[in-house]
Image (cartoon, rainbow, N blue to C red; front, side):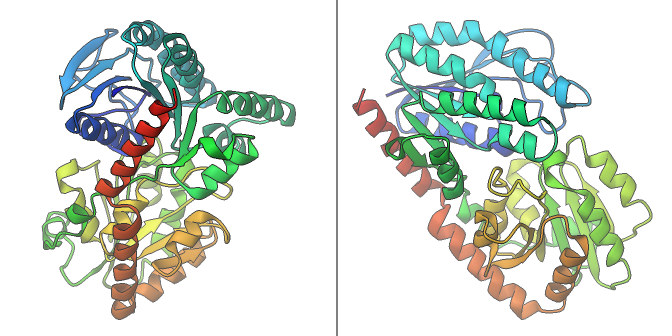
Length: 408
């Protein structure tokens, strides 16, 4: 099977959306499929293109038997609403020549990965012109989220954009999403149920759960081995509501033996550092290499997962799978009735979104209850093993791809 994956985020040592695109491509190539990728150079979550990818050049190289073409892209140092749109448009336009060339090689299926939805029209058109099946994989509903979080405004604009999005989604042969609620939203956007596929963000449960001492990170950060560590690890962007973490740390600053570790990068990191200035029990880490991810996640006694109100069923955090697989409970901000709340319930504590006092109380209760932490962590790990294991999820994805291509 010849597979062309078309999306902005793809990295050799990937994080976030790029992690799943990279692992899917490598896994399919390892199974003997011919896989090509069109992507931007790595720039996320730091919002800067690092060497050797700098410069306004197209680059193609072989990575784990996958032919990867990097397309030049404009990356704003401080992404705002207009700058972000121009950033997305630069990839969509600059990738068109490469997409046309790859379509001439007649792939069996073209998979567009959203975000960014900007890429979807060209992916669908290329698939129709070359006779391939068109597959859209939605990591988050960026249009809905942009309006819910106030990045875009205006009722008339929203109705027009969402009608256009609905029309576009209905054109694809397959639409996959990472959660059941995201598929429900696709149905409400009038996508036929027979075209929908669940493709959750997987995790390497064995690697995350492997027994290892968490003391290495504690020694590096000067944290006592007996301390209770609350960890946030992931992108530090606008969707996460990270100001809550600083508020929680300040509210619990007087508790002996409780430490906070905030790991990651992104446009909101500097804000978080400034708001935590003066807190002696807070440590910051840059984005860590993938080989140390399991060790980092097992350093935690409790994982923190803030979320902005209104975003929980539009954006299911990719970091959640690793948190659960590490065997540690999660304190999560999510509205009752959302899928995020349902997943965390019984495997951690759910508090209202953007409610720092509630998150602080939940964390304090878990800090004082080691047996409860162990029970919730075991339940979390079992959920990850049953529903998010990498090999099982990707095997189902391969079968879904075969079924899609067979109906061409």
